[in-house]
Length: 160
Image (cartoon, rainbow, N blue to C red; front, side, top):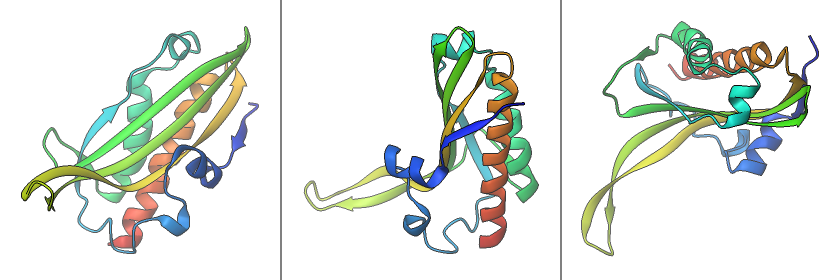
């Protein structure tokens, strides 16, 4: 299987606004994450053409994240958002940007309106850019999301 990570996760973070390792939430910031609400971004026409499957991507990510004791629920202050944005290079090559984020709902005081507001804070994010042959692309991207779920699991375990 030919797999090329064009942009390493740290560089991807700089390019797409995700925190780099030095900008990651302080140690212990992921403590207490036990249940998450899961969301996967919409696919474009190229995602379908390149054979990506939302359910497989979710299973790959959550299968690895579950190893840290994270359960999926319909109601949680914590959200996992994954996205796969795909283009084709030619008839036989697919390019997909993979991204996974852990967000938390939070309340904060807005001095301008003198009221309490609700917003989301990004606690963790990783991603990268993948290029492969169209016949291998579904497994390449699915494996990448499994790896991202594994990275989240490692950091969750570290913060416990």
